[in-house]
Every structure is written in structure tokens, then in C-alpha cells.
Image (cartoon, rainbow, N blue to C red; front, side):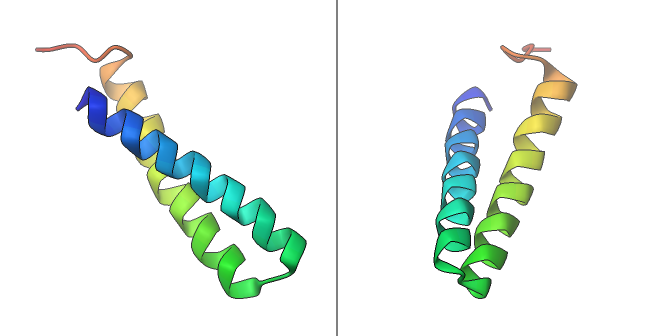
Length: 59
């Protein structure tokens, strides 16, 4: 779960970067999909850290 959390965290960061770039280009569809990616993956990482801690407990 630890490596998956890191990968999903990187995807969330890229979603945030994509949202900012889409805002600069004024692309509504890009803003929507990038923000949805940021929200879903970011929420998963946040809740995983909140529930299991970092580094995650094994039991």
C-alpha cells in the first residue's frame, strides 16, 4: 500500500498541475477532468495517511 500511495500522490500532484495549466488556457473540459483527478486521487492519499499513518502500520 505504501508504494501505491506514493504513485497516487504523484498522480494527484500532476492533476493539480494540469488544472493550473488548463486554467491558463481556459479549457473547461481540461479543468473539469484534471480537477476530478486531483480530487479523487488526493482524497484517497489523504484518507490512507489519516487511517494508516505514514509509514503505514503492518497490523
